[in-house]
Amino acid sequence: MCEASSAADVRDSDPSLLACAVIDLELPDGDGPDLAATLRNARGSLPLAFFTASTAAQLRERARAYGPVFDKPNLDAVVAWAKKVAQPPPTK
Image (cartoon, rainbow, N blue to C red; front, top):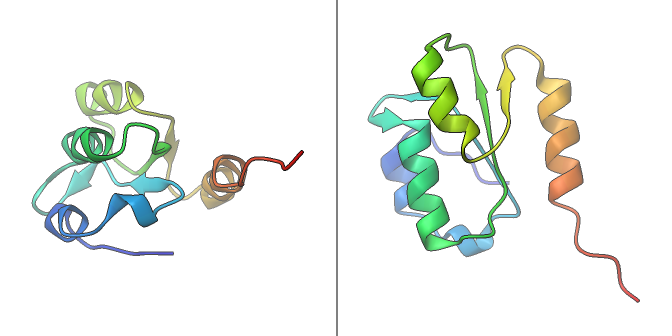
């Protein structure tokens, strides 16, 4: 698990090390959909979701283009999503 408090911190990290990413919609130095675009440009298959208290409709709609948007404080739904998408593929 990797935790970052800003978009800049995420941009300085290596997305190939992530199994998935959960992003807030409103960051101190940008917004979640812009950060999602950066991550997808670096690694197109990275599963992305958003966890937010924001009610900004336009921001939420932009985010949905990259993945599901979960409302705070429903952490259980986010954890269930992460467990589902972060699982390695089954071996044959």
